[in-house]
Length: 347
Image (cartoon, rainbow, N blue to C red; front, side, top):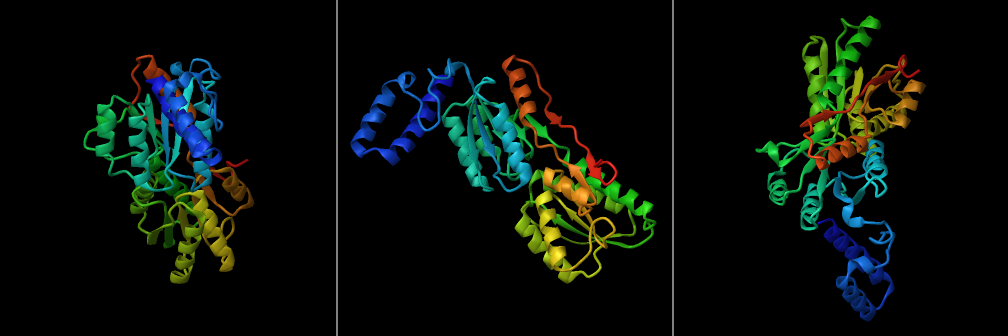
């Protein structure tokens, strides 16, 4: 199985490389040579051959379907996989960027199945619409590990486990922090007007953070959610939605941004509208992910509190795969440890 995946992947890379540089006649000759024996082909286009990496057939072949590169968090998450699931660590990774489109992910998973990978790591863009393709993976005997975001399927045996953050708890943590902060500021009896920049609607992070914060909001008689709109986890859209909020609601007390990039967009919008925000400002800014740039914004007082969403899932995925390879059982749900940062804890 692992030797077959090498043959398929090297074939694809070889064709792409030689199409750019060789004539049609030479291309045909190369393909014929490739099909006659993968093990004797030299590495091409940055992909090492079996001989150059040692015994490639013994590497664990992992197909990774990533959401995209829409945020700083996502880039750190991708880097974690690339730095962990390496040939030196016993892996042969195949990485596919879905560019925020579920149809691209479904296609990638089907390609992984055809290539007979050993494991599939799937970070699903949305929670629904996975039953058919994951049934195909199950019938092919390929374990599927969900990371970051989860899914809704009729049969939970379609995936082996899920690894990521407790998004609902993150939302509740933000609500509890705001409750404590308002009490310290002697504003716990005031009517507090809130707007929310939601993430991609239907994604696990959006659903969890929205539900978690809403649970705390329901306990506060004086909190009013003015409106919630999706900023799609990107800065430009976050700015656009925040501009609308500022024009529509002159009395905003809190903006909840369901990731850091949307918080950056909201900050841009508030600056252009000459509205004060953050520490000692009129609008309290809450954000999620705790990327490096956002933590600097916490230090500057632009973001009041940022709730960590740990992107470094690669080591936990590695640990899980190694356990499965050894025939050990793994937990169905595995959470990474997380905290939050404000002006007191950032130090």
